[in-house]
Image (cartoon, helix red, strand yellow):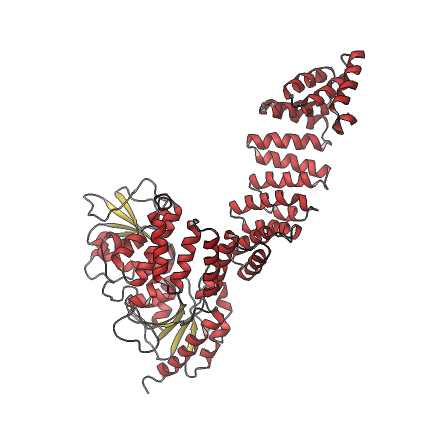
Length: 613
């Protein structure tokens, strides 16, 4: 057996044959020949030899050999049974538990495989191969907190490949925080490999840890220049951080490195659009859509959606709304698979299920199309519960909402008479509305008594949004507003950042969106970044000043400015006539890009305070 372990099968065979010649039924010799047969690729012979040995002496390690040979021959259930017997006969043998785990994993019984490998590790805790096997089984079994135990292992460079594989499994399951721990170990094991830094940077980006991601990806680019995937991720991180010009350079390099990669082409088109190079962006997107292979897949849907936002930002609503429908292929609605999409026509019978799609701001903006929709069909309206009471404040001069619209309460099944479904954002396309509808306040239009000096402030959006750093403002940058004397400020900030105020101000009690609307109704002015607060105040017809990023969302583009010039800022909005914008004028990093708009807003705030004097 020592000869066999050293790779000398011929020497081992010679000795075993001599032993069997003297004692044909010696179980150890029969088992030894079974091991030689397995080593020679003859698992079929090994099964017979191990079976003969077990018939004479049912030793645990004989069952291990039999189970492994059966596994190699594809006889999974007999292999599992044999290895289970081995663990019962000798529970202190880690080989039996490990071999049983391999069979259980192939059967798909990952929880049991993880349990067997845990038993093996308890007997041999320093075995990194067992630890890696356990990690794979634990991930596939859905176990929590797998990465900390793996990250604590004493791995060497040769283990980096398997660690990378496990990190990929975690990423595929959306467990980016745990994947990051393993990618970091791979990076530490292979500090001179650009790919290790690139993978770590990519998962850091997925976690919105942008500065760390930038450092990792820049190091990856230094170690392995001109790798398309690294440059693509580097461009996206720079875009998220607001370094638009540098993002454009990185994505241009990425496309030169991989000119046929449509993902990179679409990403470059996005940054070109943000930089104001609409023509170049449109050519790239239409090029993707002209490729029949690319156009029919997910990337084609991305290109169509991005083209839609580009056209909408230009004010081309007819083609823009049509292209904007590509979003339904990117985020397909799965809640009601048996209800067919609506084509916009009048329904001969039944009602339409009209549902919110994305954020609260989108729902508020597109509720303005509800009366137009009700002229054509009856509606069952599905909104986030936090919007229900607010939606009931919509004015109803024609009685359409009261007579033709039902708000679906949480937990209530869809009525049987619903025959079609539609997202709120599809209404302009399906109703063929190619102009911004005339505006009248359509949410909580009755205001409270105002004093002339109460100003609401919202400085941050949802930090989970990948590009939130570009639209939100660090509270310290808004501190100069607090120095404007004679004003009373009220925080309209939701979420965890609400406690980090730029200066002393009243903290309004805000629960559902109706409570927020009631607070806004008692204010004289709302100042906000691009969040749902801007849409809510605008839909109420309340004065609102929007701090808007360079290359911002399509709905705030100059194509939608009113004919009349702004009174206070440098932009307006036909979506909400009471809204004025303070747009960034340079594509710089946020700390620099916000400086000018905030300074202009402070000056405007002083003039607004003195407007009646």
